[in-house]
Amino acid sequence: MNSGPSKTAEAIVAVFVPPACREEVLGDLHERYSSSGQYGLDAVRTIPLVIISRIRRTADPQVLLMQAFAWYASFLGAAWLKDRTFLSEPWGLLRLAIPAGMATLGLILEDAYAKPGRRSPLKLARGPVLGLGLALASQGMFRISNPDLALPTWITFYGCALSLLLLSAVWMLFPPATDQLQGSNVPADWLKQSSGSLGNAGTSTRAIKGVAAIVAVVIFGTWMANRAALPKARIVTLLLVLLIAYQVWKRG
Amino acid sequence: MAKPDSLGQFEQLVLTAILTLREDAYGVTIHAKVQELARPKAVSLGAVYVTLDRLEDKGLVASWMSDPTPERGGRAKRCYRLEALGERALQESAITAKRIWDVIAEVWGKEWAREWGKRWGKEAG
Image (cartoon, each protein chain N blue to C red):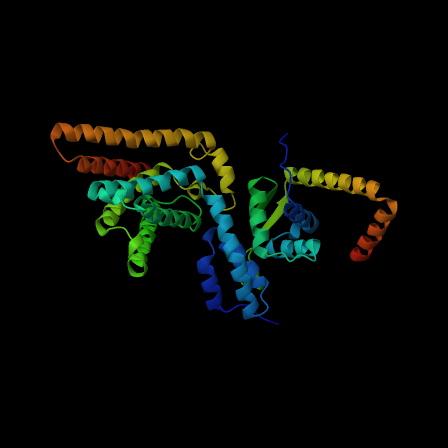
């Protein structure tokens, strides 16, 4: 009789299975083990569907759309600030969407692979950082393989810096569904329905509040900059940092 | 009382498997039962997980973690049971299937229905 898969094989499989369902999926695969080949094939067939199911449970389409928009707006803003001619280049606007898309993918994966339960503000910041990492990695790949698709260096860096601020604000105003979990067995969908912060009505209210807060910060910053004759970008950035710091303090 | 959503064919199979397995309904056993019910179609374990998650989100089944067992490498099982809403959804599906069967049998004749009944009997036996 076969005893079970090797520790190495199980460790490799465990890396790919989201922590929220790792225990039962690894246990089930272990129980079905008959040979190394069968175990590997079983894992390859099962894990993608497990990840998709986890993403379906953790991703909130409304918040995700807002985050994707924030990413794109950051790179668009960076292009507008650093090199406006880039926006009129052929495929310029589409090229800006590539890092934004990769960064959104990073956020989705971070959310799906997060351990259920409330996360500290610092752990919450991992999502935007991972998103940025993927955006930068995609740009690096394009620079090597197809430079026509890569963004100019300064637009990339300014876009990353802007998006880190904007996304951290959005991420903290709309915490991921897994953060609402009080127990690992509770489906995110129920939490979305029962929780004021992520329910349909709750999300709309918080979305309006969040957008209003960011718009207020931008308007107030612009007004302050005009009065003090300081660069607008610096004031707006400072206020966004203050907003994030307030969120971190409130959550901490 | 909440009205259950209508079920897809695969959801019906998974709910039937949970109903049959009772206390012993978890990933591996549910997959084996669904495989048996869906034959000759092959069913992947991943598809069963996706459906179980969806059924749980709809409130048709509930899950809990059992104690770890040595044959699973010291890992726990996620066990499932039907909720009242799930039982009602399954009943409705069965009633609809019965209606479809009755209408087909009426149109295609009693001989045909008897023939199919015999085939199913052989399969079950």
